[in-house]
Length: 473
Image (cartoon, rainbow, N blue to C red):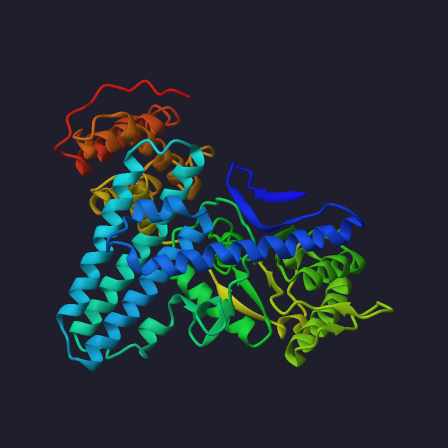
């Protein structure tokens, strides 16, 4: 008997009815999959009923501890959507100016409670990831609300049908269908209840929002999405993150010139029969003659999705195969490298492209600082962003220098550990400046050291030179 599913980090979901592991393996695995989705849906249903009590007798910490990570995340998105929409409706209908202020106060209080929890000992690594992810998502929600509130005060946003609100990722619990629904602009997705474990989520910036809108529109028209841009701008990560928002598992395939059309057919058939998303990285590495066959395969899935059929004939198959309508396919491309080609027109026609060029670093820094427990996140995020921009411009050009997103995230992770290990009243500017200094000095060449220290002194004038800290590995 299988009674529960367990994530990679000791998170347990009880199955509604235990599954017997007897008979053909594919039969009981399919039964287990269906039962997993039923059980996650039950968790979502319970959470949706408790959403109304949060900050109204039930603290955000207690609510999150009751639920598994992905459900508590869906929960705070449900709370935000309901309160936001309600505030906009009442502002338009009752001409009630105070309602937006009250909602803002609630969101700010939720955020400070979550940041406060991040500073306490949460007991396990999984819980830390869970609460840091809640902060990451809620910081964005709070900022969005304040942005729309400002536009409402200026008379630019009138009611809940305004595009400024509709273009956001909104989560609802529909009583009539008993489903969670995620809406982006005019496209509605039914949440897929796939158990995803306790995963970190991306910081949502203007770039990711734009990517979400484009990709959801593409899916709404039964096409695929095609983010394009240089390495390190988060093309694959954004696609994976959008999948997590919709409760879907995303299978990433790294394409190469060794891929043949039969390999691609296997992947596509698997995606259609399981209803998952496929993300094909560096798709333009595949050879041209293979791409033209792939175009035919994708087109057959497209037309089957349009006709909303349960089974369809896949090119090269003798028997019809099952089609789960939630299936999606995305391709990412790095333009202008050796060994990559332009896509043929018949492939381009099946995908909607979105350009992803420069990640919004300052937003990412601010949100990550909040999620590791800093209360001066706005000021420190701004200073950190300026510091790294100046380092890129003014320090000598060395092969091993990296002031990109990967370095930024490792500095932020270490600064979170430092903040938790120090007393709560320690000066945040000093802690942060010391971490940035200690983590960068070791890799700088001798000529750059005085310049880097001078930049730090200019940005943190109040901080006297603190001694180097001993970091525990």
